Amino acid sequence: APRSSWYRKIVLMFDAGHTTFDQEWYFDEITGPSDDLTKISLFKRYEGNPVFYPEGSQNWRDSHIANASIISPADSPDGNWWMYVRGSGNVPDYHDQIGLFTQPADDFKPFGPWNEYEGNPVVPHGPEGSFDEWHLLDCAAVKGPDGTVYVYYKGRMKNDNGSMDPTSAIGVAYSTDGGYTFTKKPTPWKKPGGPSDAVYHDGIKALQDENIQVEPYFCQCGISVGPVVVDANNSKRFLAMVEDDCTTERFRESIEDRIYIRHTLLRQIGWKVLNLWTPFWYMANSDEVSHMVTTIAIEQSVAPPPKDASEEESESVDAISAENLSVIPYTVLHPKIEGTPHDRPIAELSAASIITQLKFYVDHESPIHEELLQQRLFELHKEPWPNQKLVPQIMDAIKQGIKGQKFIQTGKFLYSLKNPAVELRDRSFRPSSERKMIYVSPEERMFIPSSMDERDIKQLLGLLE
Image (cartoon, rainbow, N blue to C red; front, side):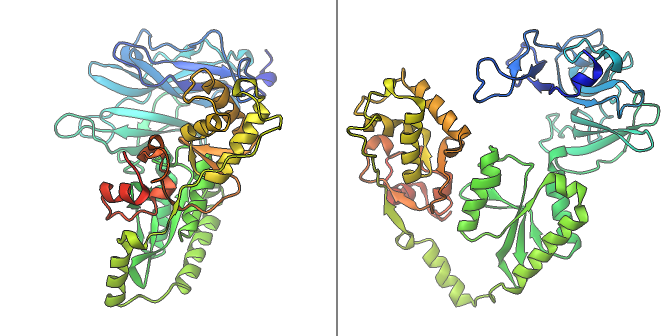
């Protein structure tokens, strides 16, 4: 195909994920739209997958190959397509290193083959004792204005006992001969962290440079937030918290969680949330830092004065007392469908009808676990639960409802777009099958004091297990 037409296509290459011993890891490729899932997917799988195998004349990539970083002809040193990849192999010990592949610009074949540079790996693992002595991961290549090619990567080293150190650091290597021979910066650019952690660490440093006291994180009930800004007049109080769009730790797995649910709920319980979006952080860094510092200064100016010791002690006693927590009965409402087109067996319902009924329950019980949501539908139609034959039909309706913005989902829980206040709910009078900890949403758990043990929590919420 002509070069210009390929610039209008999306080529996605991904790591096939963890496999068991002796199985292969490889690059895959997808291009859209989908044949089987046109309503929820942009892509369809390329019939000739995989386009890369973990093999080659050199053993630097005979175990697996992943993490492609492509430089287009507009930016490559010689006007052709360049692709840096991470390969794993025994050389003779097991290491991850970075190699180079190319294709001519006038005959681009996105499905391959790619031409391997005979001098691979172009960025090898470091010497013993260096921050990248074991692995080089997550490569990201870019050409500078003077033609220098830079490759950023995550370096991993060994512990004293020979195992892999759990921390990581961002390294950079640069090439002045067109991307073939690289010189490494001898010390990490950022440590610890991988490339996606840069905004997090840069944000902390920007605040510290302004003499603002900041802690890396605050964690309660297993839910971590941060960095958090400390009140200059009260070290036991936080002024605000900073959220970036990079990390995906617990309860930040989905886009909906990171940009909507999490922020809404944090604000409901009193947090001032400062958002750092990666594109703006790099395109207008000074403006972003200025906005963040100014907002913190305003929050500091209206912060309440510190309490004396007797007030703090009284508050502490109150905070850990279950009697002082507001708990409401968990109530379930069913829509009235008798005599309507909705009053039919589930198997005969249209997707639109199921979505309407699901939305009713989500709006009234948000956040609700997806298993309970399915169960509500069976209760409404007086059909036995569970019925695995009908579950795919319901799950498909849930997916369509999410796409149609009738409700949203993060993890196993579904949330109403009406943004109802989250409250602790007592399940004592619900069926025993519903009185389980797994059905308690993360947002409810955030209200529970960390001093309460599991027995007290179950008693508070009427749980059996």
